[in-house]
Length: 175
Image 1 (cartoon, helix red, strand yellow):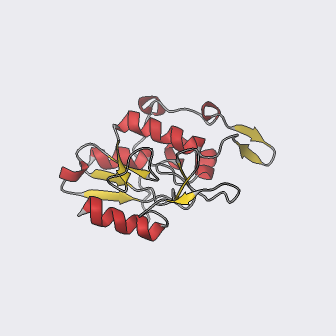
Image 2 (image 1 turned 30 degrees about the vertical axis):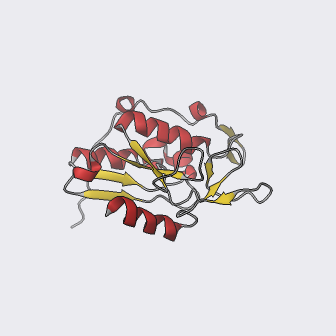
Image 3 (image 1 turned 90 degrees about the horizontal axis):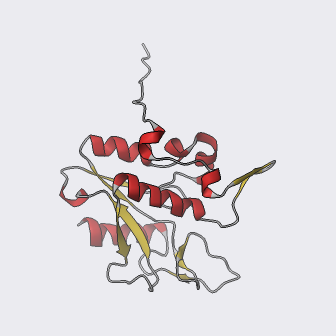
C-alpha cells in the first residue's frame, strides 16, 4: 500500500521570504529575465545568512576578499555536530539554489535549499553548503559561475572545476 508522506508546512512569513519581483526579475513571454546574472544567487545567500545565521568560509583558505576565491557556507556549529550534511547544488547555479528555474517555477522554498536547511537544523544536523560552480574570478573582483570569454576571467585556485572544489573542501575543511 502506498502512503503519501505529509510534509511539514513552513510559513513563508517565518522565513521572511520575498518574491521574484523583489529580486528584480521581470516576467516576459519567453520566461523570466534579470539584468544582472547571478543577482538571485546573491540575494538567496543573503536571505539564508539572515534566516539561518549561515557563516562563510573563503576558499582557498588563506585567500582574502581581493584574491581569486569563492565562498562556502555552514550553519553555526556545523563542525561540532555529530552528523553533517554536505550540499552541492546543480550546475551553473550558486550556493543555496537548486537552480534558478526551480525558483521561478516552484517558488523560493522549493527552488532554494531553505526547506532542507530548516528541516536538517531542526533535526540537529550541521549543514555545509559547497559552491562548486563558481570557478572563475572576474576583473570586477568577484567569483562568477561561468567564464565569459569576452573578459579576462581567471580560474580560482583549488576550485577551477567541480572535482577540485570537492577535493579541496574535503582535504582542507572537512578533515
